[in-house]
Image 1 (cartoon, helix red, strand yellow):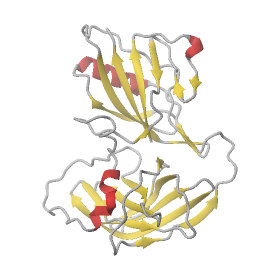
Image 2: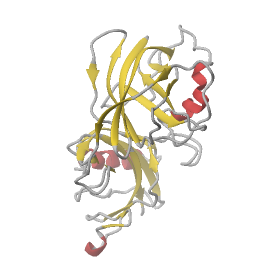
Image 3: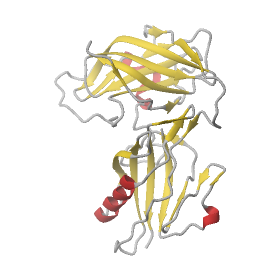
Length: 302
């Protein structure tokens, strides 16, 4: 679950400003300030042209529209292998869930780097309960290295308002069952109705959530207090670099990558080094630390 932050290099944040105020995080020190100019939840940003709003979904919600893959032809079996566009260090299978426009249920699709078929258990969480959606023997289509399942309709009886979801376990090609850490995502934007003939799965209630001991069901990744700013001879023009970091449940960065370059190798590489050694406050789900991802923008100001 990804949140956008800004790191402005060369600015010092007074101690009295280093607090979380109304969703705007100003945690800093060492000549850097951090803020959350937008509380909008993102999941990744496709590098290249387009505004942040146009580039939102590195993960697969755009593909889910109308569950179009139910009727779309499979890509050629002999297509060249490509890198998995949803690659992450937590789980080799990711899901996308979004409500149908007619209110009849939710659309679900699964994505992986390899495989011909998949069985999976997807956990769905409402304000009060957790549910398990078990999908079995779904065929994959797509290029080698970037696979996607057919769409499935989730129908709750009675109707349920799902807030979050994650892949709990999976089986590829009839092999061993594998579990994933709780790599949690919020419910996606509404999609249009699914075509006739889509498989239907009824999620089963697993347990009640009960009263939480913490303030929020989900708390995104936050900064620790030891992030340093970039210093160096990088010219007299402002520069920005955006980095996507995958953070484990201990707050350590397992992997990071530049999603929008500053155009200066020294700025990009130094920024990645800063992120890699930073101790983050991990995301929390149902009051428990979980893995997650965060997108960080670093601005060099001469």
